[in-house]
Length: 263
Ligand code: SF4
Ligand code: SF4
Image (tube, rainbow, N blue to C red; front, side):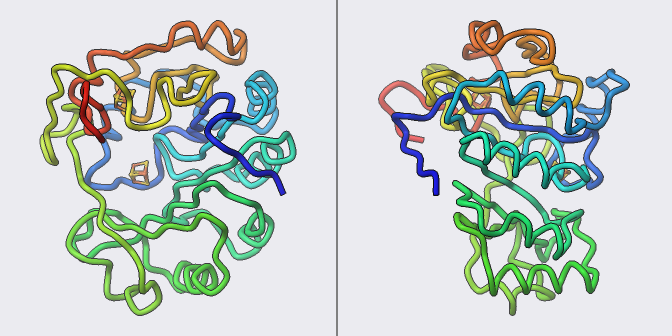
């Protein structure tokens, strides 16, 4: 089993497997994303994923999350298996929409660094259809969880349809996505020096988000695509890496860390 420590991590690459997301959660600026992402390539293909992943440094962290539900893309399971076999640490954030029991069994024994499961809540902020298939899958995962599992919800409490299944979950803060949403917590960090996520400077080889067409943007807050770094299908990781920096957006971000302060 591959184990990772902070000192030997390469880069941090977060993957958006499809644009737009099939869901439309209350706290997610999908409208901004749809306006900004003009490419006709809406799905990341397995072949293009390999093209990109073969360029990143060894022992990187690869996370399926960013701007869509990862499992809406049918190739995500194969992408995860490929990245793991290449020696990268794999992570997921998902609502489970698009995942099936059969697919889950293919990946459940991998040593995930993090497997975040976003649950439906009593206020309907996270829009997950409560089908029999979803409930059966969730129950199975609770009984046989992956390494690194973490259950969370976004408002009120965990929905009554699932609260008897998941005993241990926590509430996440809804924030205004660096000012892209009217709702949610507002942040202002005039003296930001560091990203509290892994996008900037945490990993020795930098980090960013990969989009289905190969474009790279600064982080999971870059819904408006303004923080463009390059295209990993046609450029090297070093060329992308040299563009990575703090941006104006960081000042408005809940993950920003100011000089002398903790996250
Ligand atoms: S929060 Fe996640 S699942 Fe919900 S719309 Fe945004 S990307 Fe999709
Ligand atoms: S906006 Fe800046 S501080 Fe916030 S997650 Fe992105 S890179 Fe990190």
